[in-house]
Each structure stands twice: as structure tokens, then as C-alpha cells.
Amino acid sequence: MTTTMKKIILAIAVVLTSLSAGAMDLITNADINVRLGYGVGGTMPLGMPATIRHLNSYKMQFNPSLGIDVAYPVYRNWSIMAGLQLENKGMDEDAQVKNYKMEITRGGQTLAGVFTGDVTTKVTEWMLTLPVQAVFHYKKVNFKFGPYVSYVGNRDFSGWAHNGYLRVDDPTGPKVLLGEGKDERGEYDFTSSMRRMQVGVDLGVDYHFDNRFGAFFDLAWGMSQLHKTDFHTIEQTLYPIYGKVGLTYRLK
Image (cartoon, rainbow, N blue to C red; front, side):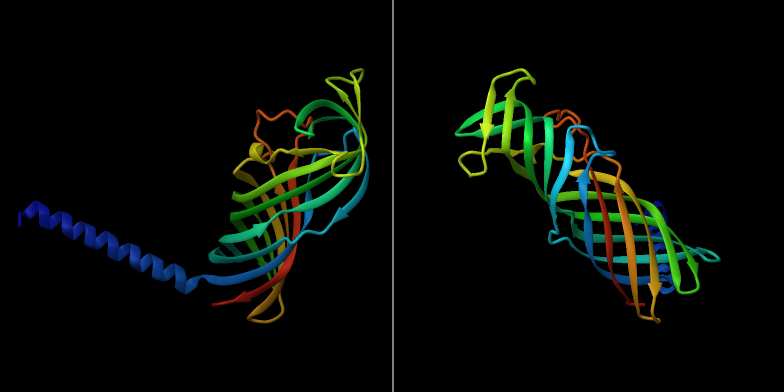
């Protein structure tokens, strides 16, 4: 073995030893928590547009979240926390609209125009979320704020227009009546136009009951629109905005 090769192997060994020591130091000084929560919110425009007149109904969806995070102290009462969460951001709502831009399918025929009546929308977004947050500790309370990035695996954005009429192409176009029955309403499915990657900001509060158990509340505000930038069938830009409440358990 040459002298140069020995120096390279020695250098690699030193680096690996340093990394291992740093990792052990990180684990030793960090707090590790498991989180179990439930989310409530919706995928919505920022501000209520004039085309949406009334929210007829909103149904809670199965929006659980399960995650683990590691908080490492950096300065006095401050820590940096990173985690990984499996969660769903879903909703089921029905709204009354007027002259709402829409594309529907009925009887194998696709029609586009403006719709007046009721629109039912179902959204599902099962995702893996990576939050990175600055944490300020005050007695039993932790205040958190920071960005997150999510990868959406299983997704759905679909529904139907019903109890109204569609003006084909524009507000003065031919009138197509849409009823309540499955064969009378107009179906739509914009799942393929949904983004896989989402970014946003997350702020929240943790409260510790004791050394192990606690509760939390988070508000996640999506900054990237739900659909891709070339999607224009719905005129409003939609963002996922969800609150989450749950329990924490400290592993160490």
C-alpha cells in the first residue's frame, strides 16, 4: 500500500469518526417526540370570490397525522426542530356558485363554460411532510415557526355540479340544465392537474403536561397553489390551509 493511499484511508477514517461523534452528540442532546394529531381545514382561495355565493355544507374528513421530530438546542431557550409526518389534508364541501368557470362531463360529453348552482368538491391529499422550525421554550410551552415541504402521494380533486345550469363557453352561451341525480349532474375530475410538491409555513404551540406527555396545535398555511400553474379550468387559485390538534409523547 502506497503512502498516498494510507493518507487517504486515514483521512476517511478521521472524517467518519468525527461524523459519528457529531451524530452521537446530536442524539444525546436532542429531544425526540412522537406526534399523533387530527387536521381540520380546507383547500380554498385567499378571499371569497364573488362567484362563490354561499357554503352549503362542510364535512369533516379522516385527516389523521403521525410524525416524529427531533429538536436540538442551539442557544439558550432556542432550538431547531425537524421532523417527518404522514398526514392527510382532505375536505368534502358543497357551495352555491354563480357564473363559476367550470368543465364537466355528462353522458360521455365534455362541456366547458360558466355554471350557476351547487358544486360539491371532494379533496384528498395523503402526503409526507418535512417541517423545519425554530422553537422558543418558555416554561412548559414551546412556540414554533418555520417552513415545510410536502410530497403528495395519494391525491384526488373531484366532484360534481348539480341543481343549476351551465352556460356553454360564456355567460350568454347555450343553457344546459343540471339536476340532482347521478345521470343528471355534471361530473369533474381535476386530480391529474394537482401538484405533487407543496411548500408552506407552519406555526404552532406545544404544551407539556409533564416530562413525557403533551399537546399541540399547529396551523399549516400552504404557499404553493394546489394545482399546476398551467391549470386554468377553475379561475380561483386554491391553497391548502389546515389546523391540527393532537398529543405528543417524548421518547427522550
